[in-house]
Amino acid sequence: MSRVRIVGGEWKRRFVSFHDAPGLRPTPDAVRETLFNWLGQDLTGLACLDLFAGSGVLGFEAASRGAAHVTLVERDPRTFATLQDNAAAFGTNRLELIRADALKFLPRASRRYDLLFLDPPYHQGWIERVEPRLPGVLAPDARIYAEAEHPVERIGAWETARSGRSGQVYYHLLEAITA
Image 1 (cartoon, rainbow, N blue to C red):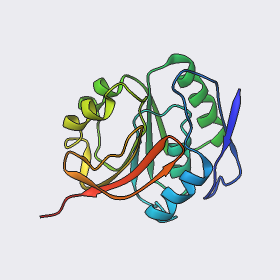
Image 2 (spheres, rainbow, N blue to C red):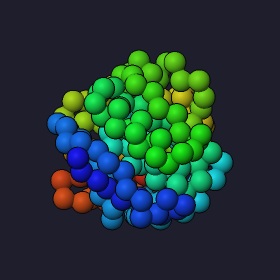
Image 3 (cartoon, rainbow, N blue to C red):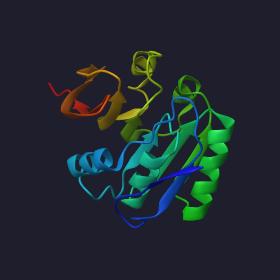
Image 4 (tube, helix red, strand yellow):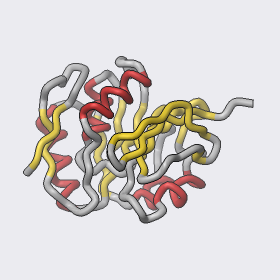
């Protein structure tokens, strides 16, 4: 079992455990620090969706920084069980864990989200497959954080406002395109 630490908020310095699995790459500390500098440290009141949760560190980090609600979606049974253990250790009712395929979850989503964490497995075309399903799930002014194996300029009605690179990972903050 491996661990990654939460870098800010009420759970700062606490650890999230995860097991090694193909394609599971928790967002590094330095990249998360950059992301939450872009977003602002306080996410109070936001509804967040961690669509390909994996370790869940992005969702747990958002909850640590005050998000009102965080939905973590993961389809792998073993990874999901570890997410459940981590969520129980934090003891909050602001986390909702759903074991499902991302494409099947999106049409069933029961709320609109203000912030989407989109860090799918690489080289499988997930961003392109998820893109047409996002308008019904995201609030009009929602932001998207996306990690990919290549630069991302746009996802549907959202365009990249900020971006960076860490090793082989390209990371992006996308904002709604305004008329």
